Image (cartoon, rainbow, N blue to C red):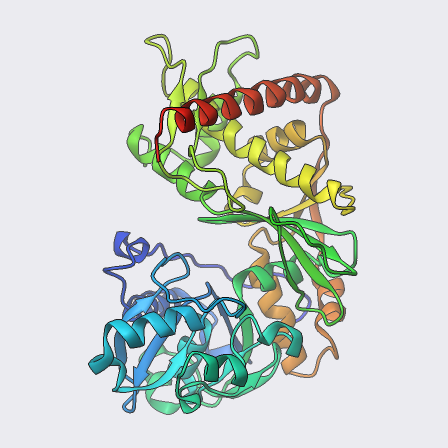
Length: 443
């Protein structure tokens, strides 16, 4: 990105299937595909800063020679040993690793997360990125490390987003084709960078960031306590990110794309076929899971009232309606807790899909706002980078300066009424099927 927040060049690299398999993933995949990206970048020799964000909570262990010690524990990896009352998302993964593979763990010298690992490979400097002292308890603290009985020397010092971590070293610069000595600046978790990239930095603003998972993130001036929501400190000190977590929306749509034989069909074309169906067409219901928890997930899902007259468009409509209704439910829960939402600023691949943006606006009854750069995480990284380079004093100042609106989708009143009625019927049917399965003793 340029200093004014416009995109100079964009490249995208899709990770292979093993990136979604906790048992097969290796951190080398990140470096391999990062290197491929850089080889396609046309302005590598002119860059003045590198900022890396990534998924979390993820644990990458490295030994004293900087080599990866498996397993890498990804954000969706459920293996952990949790101590009650400890808020860290990372330490339970480390504790499980130490207990399950004690000989491997004995060789570990550093514990890093995704963006810290890549920054470490570039600079040789180890750190832990935290947006604030208040947020650090959700990563790790000295007290938490002691309670888990872990060696504090394994945990690098904390730095804040926008801090210069180090400089690109000669060996890796030659390998990647970028200049030696370029500063590497702390980014952080992907969702926090998306908050900055959509300028969701003032109380009352809300963004919908989607990838494999999705979060409806509301910037609040205070803590919100509801088990259906996740409330964490914001990247901006003194503010909080209150989120409805939809852990599988992107994964569900990609799954449907594969099983329906549409992997070569553009997302926009799929949505055009889905939205072209008349409202009076009978559409089956898709329920993503018979388990109900704080995070909307995809496990043991089912189609209901699926018939021979239904094709991929009708089934696709059922899937995307289930996603839209999940977003609607998160918006309702947030507003029940006093988080008034006037509009949703969207980011990720969904932001590039006009039919889906309009359909989502109609379903939830709120305007959908698309930024000039749809992948808001990139803009958030630029905010951190420009703070690190001294162009801005604060992350929120940079966010306000860089965010620009490129499109706005207003809800259609008639379609919203029909979706509102459909949402009520969907919720009633979903609840009835969950009760039926519970009564039948299904786990």
